[in-house]
Length: 106
Image 1 (spheres, rainbow, N blue to C red):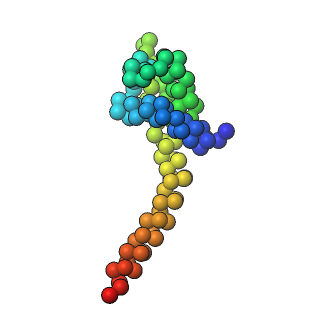
Image 2: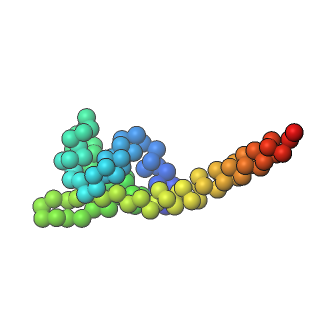
């Protein structure tokens, strides 16, 4: 599976997107902090975090006995640059040209 596929797979699940939003709001969260806002088992949250880690969207670091989870937005940016930006640029350019044409009409 390619890196892009892993990122798309990770982002396809609403629980994983929720976890990424939580890490965006408070980076360096523990498993306990992340699971406290979800109605699922600790093991379930761990499985979702593993998918996010495999996609490179979450990195972890030990701090004493705690394992802290941090958001890594680089893969999302790469997806944006590779898949989203190229499709929106053409549309925006077409809209700008259309606007110029409409403004030139009497």
